[in-house]
Image (cartoon, rainbow, N blue to C red; front, side, top):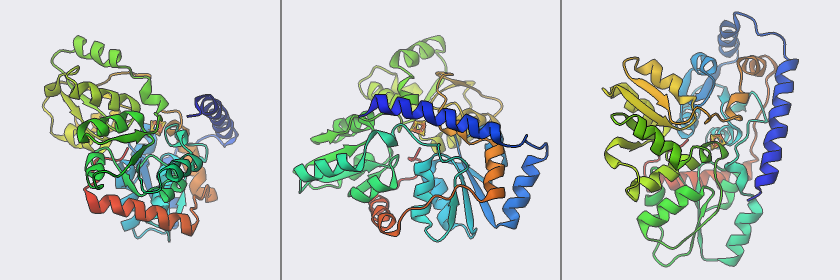
Length: 346
Ligand code: SF4
């Protein structure tokens, strides 16, 4: 892992993103109408991840998790996909919808988890383990997906690993907490890359325990894919968190849960952008963040002004070279063959 480098990269990316925002014209009051008109004129569909700013979520045609949005992109008859999310998500949309133009409103919207591993790291492991199998969580770049054998989401990661013949050496990347969980539940000997999401890593187990103790009747929703929630997943399986009140769900699963729950209070351990969707769906339940600090600076780079600019100026196109895309698509399709990836992508 290159933690120091990523920290520097993040600081630089945030500075560039803020400067770019300041150079844009003032946001017109009718910006949402303009976005809809431009999208209609260009036959564009606007997809927004659950961690987007509320205004961006509200103007989008679809809001959801990364894999669900990529599948919507592939099935859509739109010519242009405006992906309001981070870069690896827009790449996944391009991999699954190669004939469409995919735009992201800010190229600096990266991901610390995806950036924790490079292609050379994967190749080095493969060189040392020529008969081994590499499993990649979907929070990875297209270049990484192209080098691995199969992708997984949190919900099917264990099934993907169980599908690998006994005795094969396995490399799981890039999330160390999800990898450790899969190693534990499958009992397989797995090399796990020591990557993590810096946003979720800051929601500590003590944050979880303290919030639960202060809200003894509340349900707890934890997201299984990022660092904090895979830590929580570990604590649940070891009995450190009460399983009866702890539900491990992707952002898509949280949205479904919010529709049906009768709980008066629900604690949510993931990026705080999801709270907007949950509260919109159910105003009789009190949805509270486990940590108000869990804000992804990359996700928040996608602002209304940048979305408007994206449609006006046709920027920024996300491309994946066809060879890389074809190899990456195979890894994603192998995952889909093994088990349902639904409700599992970030
Ligand atoms: S919340 Fe974490 S895993 Fe998700 S995009 Fe941000 S940095 Fe990446």
